[in-house]
Length: 382
Ligand SMILES: Cc1cc2nc3c(=O)[nH]c(=O)nc-3n(C[C@H](O)[C@H](O)[C@H](O)COP(=O)(O)OP(=O)(O)OC[C@H]3O[C@@H](n4cnc5c(N)ncnc54)[C@H](O)[C@@H]3O)c2cc1C
Image (tube, rainbow, N blue to C red; front, side):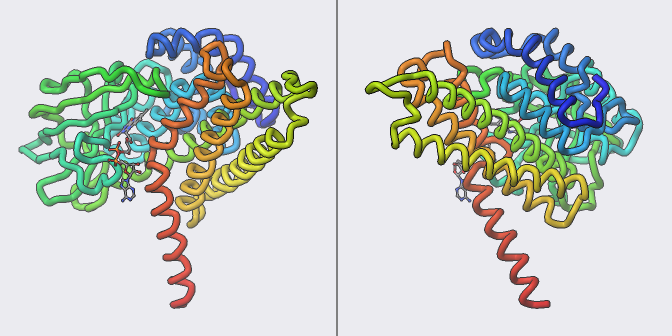
């Protein structure tokens, strides 16, 4: 799909595809806990998987407002479909910016076409929120690196053709390296039965003496900081914020329809004051989150100094809005809200998982406060 400059037209095009091709599949996706490869290919053909990838690498390089609309619309169908686009964007961001050779950039071109699937492998059994203590080792040996360790809860691990992997070098620097799935010593154990984002096709990935050419390192060994991981995470937080907004919007829509159509005690639900409170708090949370995501989108386009903080605030606010909106939607739908016949219960489950991925709510609370204080300390010292 060639993106029109007009955002409204772009949104209409994406929504038409979502309604025709994705929505009819969502119950099947959720029950089977997987996304068919044909559906992934259909999304790639629309340009969704190359949405944030540079044009020279076969992507669309969408501006942030278009990216926001895309993630919102796809999340309305299914959170895992949105996560597929998010993780692809994270992997691509790390590889296309930090790869040292064209050979590696070819992986990105294949991502955009849907020919290859990538996984972003940071979390480990002992290391979740505190990635700086990562235990996986990336050890130089002649012209290669040897990778040993275990990554878990990795989205798309079941089908990924390659992984970008966070580890620690001999000098105790954190680094990221690309590892092809075909590398001897790499094995994947599927994880099923998640509360939400059930079709993320998660897995635990074990690296046992995996030998990879040295130029697969995404960054420089002396850098001392895994910039490619940080860069990928910022991208992921931005698009996850947009996905959360899509869930929140969809939940608000469902509860609004219910408040108008459902009569109790001789009047529509919206005439009851406690329901009005639920509607107001949801509407305000969704609208506030939208403003904060818009602000993050602007900061991202301008690569402004407050971009990282703006993105963290947006992800924090949008995931909270999604949780509140989906919770209230289920509540106002009553018993039917607890049944799969309604999308509300899935929004509720997906929103819970969104509060954990790309940095938990608590980690955002810590980092937002610290960044805010740091700015004020700098100002006071100036
Ligand atoms: C659906 C899904 C998809 C995922 N996909 C990926 C993926 O593709 N790649 C990947 O690498 N990982 C992935 N993850 C893992 C995810 O990134 C981690 O679950 C997340 O970072 C939290 O780590 P943890 O689960 O180990 O929790 P922990 O870090 O052990 O945290 C447990 C709880 O303690 C809180 N906590 C931790 N530290 C602090 C602190 N300093 N102060 C206050 N509270 C704290 C946390 O907020 C949380 O509530 C996925 C997870 C899910 C659920």
